[in-house]
Length: 196
Image (tube, rainbow, N blue to C red):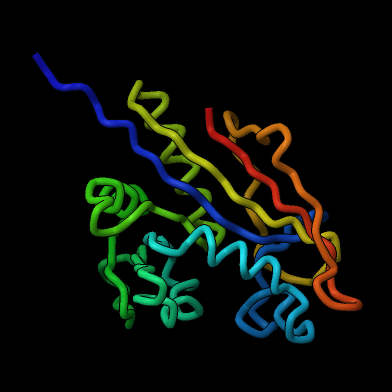
């Protein structure tokens, strides 16, 4: 008699513009569309990110890794980079060959890794959503949460947050409005989505 399949739990965290879903801009500081805003403009979002990621493992793609590599080992944070075996990458974190592998490695040893937190970029988010859907379609347990920051200000950028796949629903009562953190800064909402 086979054992029960373990329910895999993971989260995603991202910030993007509410209109246009702009997630990244290679020309802006740190690759963030709002990266050129004055210091403190997005301090509330940064505090939100720190709260979610502390004590956990951030799973990121190879293009996102350089911007987050400095966070590896801080506040008990770990970094796991999803990179193709034929594309060597310099990172202080660990390397996985796929998002599925990364999530399952982290979820398999929460005492060491904390929880798996997918933190970008666009392709990595999409692969994480597809992973949740595939597990659900195969009758395997999955529980996923997406913590989003939606900026009300429009910023230019070529990297877009993928649309949520079927099965993701906004959690009622958890959308909260914030900002601006300093005069002239952007307003934003914290929004939570769950995969069911």
